[in-house]
Amino acid sequence: MRIVLSLLVLPFLAVPAMAQSDSDIVRAAIDDVFRPAFADFNAATGALESDMEFLCEAPSVQRATAARAQFRETVLSWSRAELYRLGPLLEDNRSERILFWPDRKGVALRQVQAALAEQDETATSVESLTQKSVALQGLGALEFVLFGTGSEALDDGADYRCRFGLAIAGALHQVAGELDAAWQAPDGIAKRLLQPTEGDPEYRNQREVMEDVTGLLAHGSEIIRDQRLLPFLGREGERSRPRSALFWRSNMSVPSALANFEGLDDLFTRSGIGAVDEENEWVSNGITFELENAVRAGALVTDPVAEALDDPEQKQALDYLVIVTQSLDTLLGENLAAARGLSVGFSSLDGD
Image 1 (cartoon, one colour):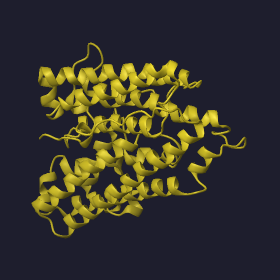
Image 2 (cartoon, one colour):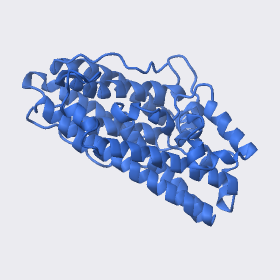
Image 3 (cartoon, one colour):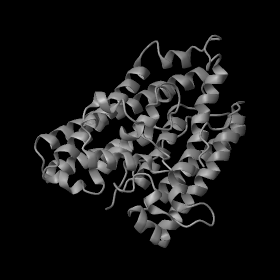
Image 4 (cartoon, helix red, strand yellow):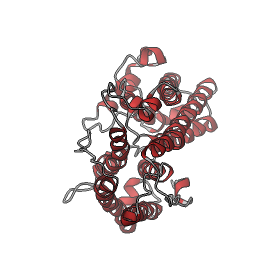
């Protein structure tokens, strides 16, 4: 199955020519990046819940196909937003409830298979499901319901499996609604970022805010490499493992990683953080160049992961994406931060 992302055909935005103040950058990031991204994710999960409800009401191949298609759209929407790891996304285990990953021990798969085998009715309502393990509540669990072993039964009726999937979709929409509301709230995270105070444990001044926003870019490239690409490509000397890829069942492994790059590009360009003084213009140009390289390389990967890894051209393109993230690590985490007089610390995720 071949999947083409919109980001592969849309040109990257030009970096603003005039440098903006830190407060202007933060405001633009909030209004033009964070709020739209989480609003889009909220809308996508709402459509997913509706499609799952329609499927459960009257199972058919057409309705199952629609639900699977909306799942893929939801994955893309999440992937564009998930690297904005600050504020509401880091509270109440929201990130893990949406996507329990990395899952090195296969916890989610075991729990989802157990729920399906036992037909655990407490996993078929949003209220009771959200009291269970986060591994049962998110996109990984729903992917198995829609695409995993036995999922073909959804096409002509699989009552428990569908109700379980509907509950997961409802839980996702609930969390997405919380995120959207938190970013839209006038007295919430937006105010904290725009009006830092000495009493705030995280954002005492504008510099700390800017370091967090810049850190999203630097740590984002690390996450793409260490948690999205290397698990299935293998580190140096390791063999490829296509079934270690996130979203391999739905053929969304590479599209979701490319949507991650799109999320980084949106933050870099729309916020104006890349507009630096003339002396450091090479930094912004380099970042734009590497983000464009990611798009070009990603366009060459048209097959599911297993087939792509067996094709020399596609495998080379995937390996090149890793090289792009390494270059972005330096450009974003060191050069851009230095150009703005900031210090970006280590990621809270080890990525091992």
